[in-house]
Image 1 (cartoon, rainbow, N blue to C red):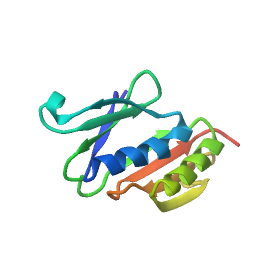
Image 2: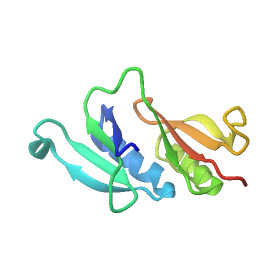
Image 3: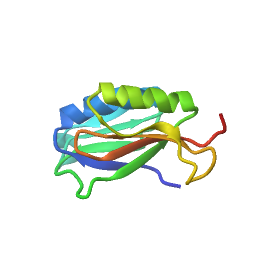
Amino acid sequence: MIDHTGVAVSDFARSKAFYTQALAPLGYALLAEFPAAVTGSVDVAGFGEPPKPDFWIHRGTPNNPPIHVAIRAGSRAQVDAFHQAALAAGGRDNGKPGIRAHYHPDYYGAYVLDPDGHNIEAVCHDPA
């Protein structure tokens, strides 16, 4: 089981605002934040479902090639809401919400590119 993961971002404040808005429909919130003075190297922010962050961003040179991260949604409506919120937060569409039957018959996902081009997905595996 993966405990946590994350991505490097070029503009920490912009990305923190993006992820705060984009991930809210999935039940994610900004749960932890530590400045470089505390970490000894870079600013970091952790998002997740309370009480534990499992997705982190840190100030730095963005990963190249960009990273793909998929976050499980509890419903197809949450996938739709994520996509709308991410676009409203400045993300770029990389795949509208819908069935991806080539993965499996109930795979319902949506994809957005964050401000640094990371491919962020919300996915629900449950039948409609």
